[in-house]
Image (tube, rainbow, N blue to C red; front, side, top):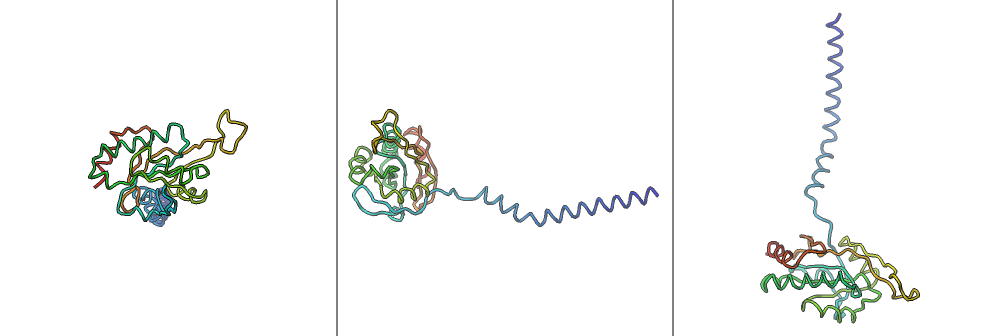
Length: 208
């Protein structure tokens, strides 16, 4: 009698194991597919944009194909973060050496299109690298470019402002420099606070 009960219990156990294996086999492709997306997926940074450069010319991401892009989002009324970031880019390109630096286009995209007109951008970019390209556009165009690069920005009322004047504000924004490849694909990023020597060293490793 005991043997019979044992055999029945063993049969039920084996049936449960087989059912579990069958369910796992059915779910395995989805599980593996999810794993592949996590480990080999490309960073979703960068994409199409259409903006005006600081000379008033309409440009898109296709105009920079074949060259690396160092892309920085900011605004010309930024008191310290943006000038510091652009200075680091300028100095890093100088330290990189002429041969590799010529393969790179430094790009400054405003997040404050209300104040950063083509004329304002032209006046601002000449304070930094001689090949720095300033880009502006409509609110919608800037929003599209920022979205493509996963850049956050928001208008913030300035502290101690003058009676709520329309231009009495600052901009919060992502302060990251993106390195994009000749095909427009994301390669690397540099956080705010990266030194010029460190940026130049890393660029030297990545640029071919």
